[in-house]
Image 1 (cartoon, one colour):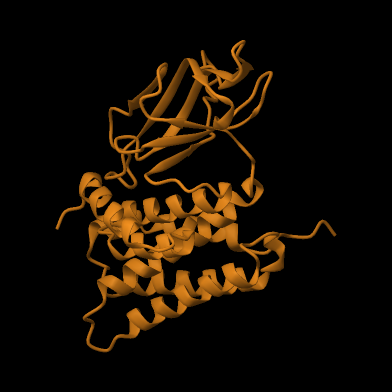
Image 2 (cartoon, one colour):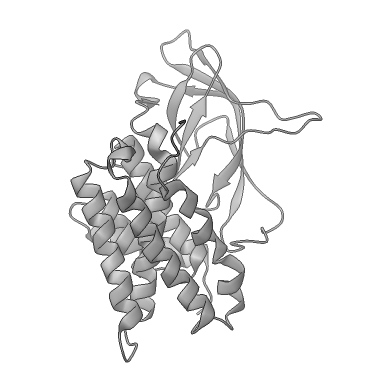
Length: 274
C-alpha cells in the first residue's frame, strides 16, 4: 500500500478519538502503529511532541512554526507581533517551514517584535495564507511542506500560549519520533515468525514510557541523562538491523531512514564546559 498523507490523517484521527486520555506518549504509539512510511512516523512523533511541549489539548494536526527565511538576498520578513488597539495581537511576516501543510489544522508560531511570544493560529484565520512548496522534498517526499504568510492576522488574548517546555522541544521531538518509529516497526513485524524485531521495538517503547513518567515529562531533561542515550542506542541498533536485513532492498526505507539517525544527537547527554 502506497502511503498518502490524506489516508494517514484519516487513520490517525480515528486512533486519536479512541484514546482516553490522548496523552502524548499514547498518541505517539497509536500514530506509529497506523503509519505506512517514515513520513507518517515523523507526523506521529511530531504531533505528540508539540502537545507535550505546550500542554494544549489540540484535537487535530498542529505544526510548530519557528523557522524563518535566512536568505542573504531579499529574505522574507520574519514574524512580528504587535498589540491590537482592540485587545489582542496583530501578526505580520512569514514562517518558512510548515510540516503537513496540506492537512494541518492549526499552527503554533513563534513571533518577535514588540510583543514576542508563542501564538495559536487556526487554519482559515483571515490574513493567513498557507503556501505548499511546489516540489516534493528529496527526503520524506510524502510529507507535504510549505510556508505560512501572515498579513495583519488578528488574534484575541486567548491565542497567546505559555512557552511550556519549549527549551526541551528538540529532545521531546526526538524521543516521541523514535517512540513512534518503534511502534511502526512492532506493528509492521506483527506476524514475523521469530518475533525478534517486534519484541525489541516493544521493549524500547516501554523504556520511552518509563523515561517520560519517571522524569516528570523530562523536565528538566538532564535528569534523564544516560537513560535517554541508552534508549536512543536501542533504537539506532534496530534501525541499522532493518537496513542490513529485511529492508535493505526497500528504496523508500533506505532513502528516509536517516530521519531516525538524525534525531540521535538530541538524546545524547550534554557535554560539560569543563
